[in-house]
Length: 421
Image 1 (cartoon, rainbow, N blue to C red):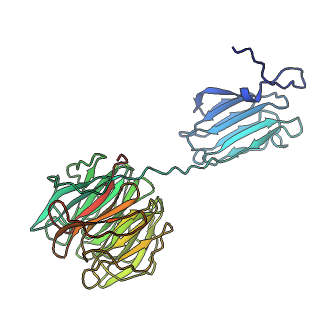
Image 2 (cartoon, one colour):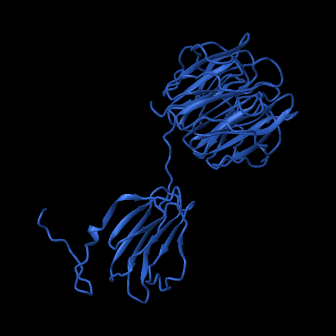
């Protein structure tokens, strides 16, 4: 002990109360359905599995204090109930029901007197707004050149594309890819045999850029679809072609598990693109319905697809999209009757801007992904298969062509992975 005397308050009874700086925190995490608490103590209340009734002391002195914290941010799912144990609570008798049902809440109550009893000093909700670290690397995979391919090319955190890596899994083209789990990627669906139905197989990519073997797909096999990250750590595949255009979607959880078909919202189409925007939402845009369109559909951070929004810019298909600047997106290239090099930037609110004349060779059927935390890269593509790339700055500025590395191809996909540079 230091021998220092803390400032203490003498209660009306003559008993010295614990100093405010000396509030004692219970070492155990409370998980049982009932618990009796003591004055001048703090408690971590974990309602993950069940609601919890908090029984307050049957006797209290003016200035007694109790603090309760939502340990797992689950009070909104399983509430806490305050049993004031014969004493008043905010001036109401113990017969009244007192509940707290907001996730992330902390409750700090102080005893006043017999009239008002326990009074909340505060019952704040702590904001939970973590921003996941952005992906630093990227991967291009699969595609077509003199036949379908399964090769990949990794992209480092500076946007440098590496040589071909012999692919794993079923060769295919016209597939889609997205980041999931914060630092991993998934390739899914695509045309594996030249038929109209396509496949539903997926291949997961770990945070070292290693592609895993085929996983039997869930949902309708299709090609010419798009995919985006959403919700901070999940992904969504949407739309596509099965012999006819579809608007269904398949959600991917943060472990890379693909869910069953969800009937889509908005106009069925193929050859569109998708990207994350606003840190936790997604956007599908453009495509072919029978004619080229510029409409878009926003995706909430819960994976819910919104209805059509009239598009801005040149209607086109076979374009690509990626996130940039941490919370914005870019759609670029594609076929508007012939290959183009224009771009459309997307704000952090999901608003698509007007056409901006592109830089570099006009192209279509390219891959695109984010890299370096806040930048993007477009690579490969047609109409004559190429391996060129174009980097996108964190301001959405597209750079000139860079002579590509690896096998020229088109109809490939790309996604970001790894939060380590």
